[in-house]
Image 1 (cartoon, rainbow, N blue to C red):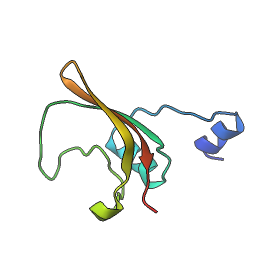
Image 2 (cartoon, rainbow, N blue to C red; image 1 turned 120 degrees about the horizontal axis):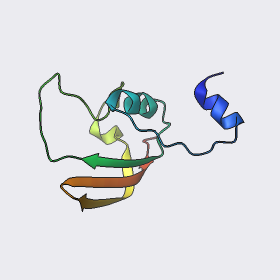
Image 3 (cartoon, rainbow, N blue to C red; image 1 turned 90 degrees about the vertical axis):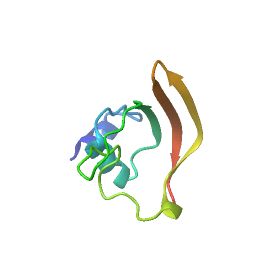
Image 4 (cartoon, one colour; image 1 turned 90 degrees about the horizontal axis):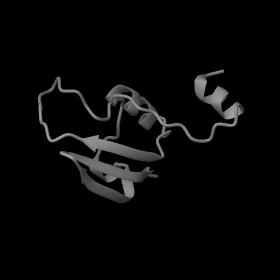
Length: 90
């Protein structure tokens, strides 16, 4: 039994996961992300080896991109806070 199955059997219905692009990408690929709370720092590094916000396999084209439903966007100190429920493509 995996961790998520164990949590379901324990009655857990919500789980806050904090991690990097690799963890987020793995959960995104499994369509296990239903809501996003993200802070974006006003810093750019770029390059092919740059850390990605969403790792994993991802989606192939913009028409197939997952979208945030009615996203909330606000400035928190110098960071941009984005929150919304994820709508996956069919």
